[in-house]
Amino acid sequence: MAKSGENLAQHANAMYMLADSGSGSTKQTFTIGDLAKEFNVTLRALRFYESRGLLRPTRDGPLRLYSRRDRARLKLVLMGKAIGFSLNEIKEMLDYYDIGDGQLTQLRVGKTKCESQLMKLKRQKLELDEAVTELGRALNIINNLLAQREADAPGLPNV
Image 1 (cartoon, rainbow, N blue to C red):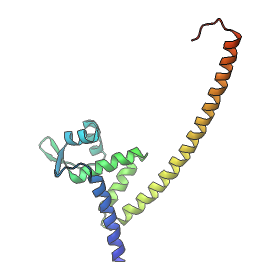
Image 2: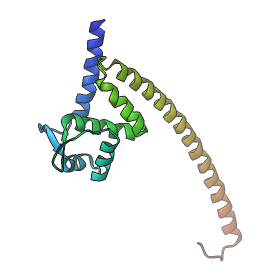
Image 3: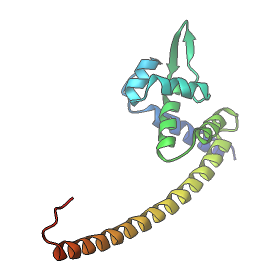
Image 4: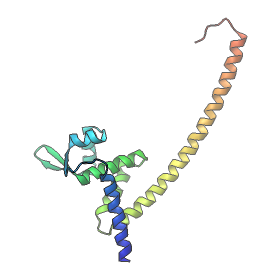
């Protein structure tokens, strides 16, 4: 059983390492400007994420110093937002990282939330596909009616 717990912890740590990869940087701390530039977000957004407890920079006077962990968390926040999770849902999943159970709870909650979000997005995709089909039909009808009316009144100006 300990082996399974170790594997889960390794996978959870791998998730943070994946989120922490890609910068090519060996820096251990980042300023608010560094992260804003790297992730193409505003300073205001970073301060907002901090106010919501998603990031926890240390302070050196007025200067915010973000750790590699904060950088990884920011990447996970942005990834979560991109697939439709609310900031509260993202915070909940990130906060389970530190409860001391080898990230078992974090993985279970993350799995459940991801499955639910996937189902929701699939439903939305179906609804969107139906709307696109209906809009295409409506446009065909409009084009046919317009062609008929223009054929019946050749001298009228086009709008």
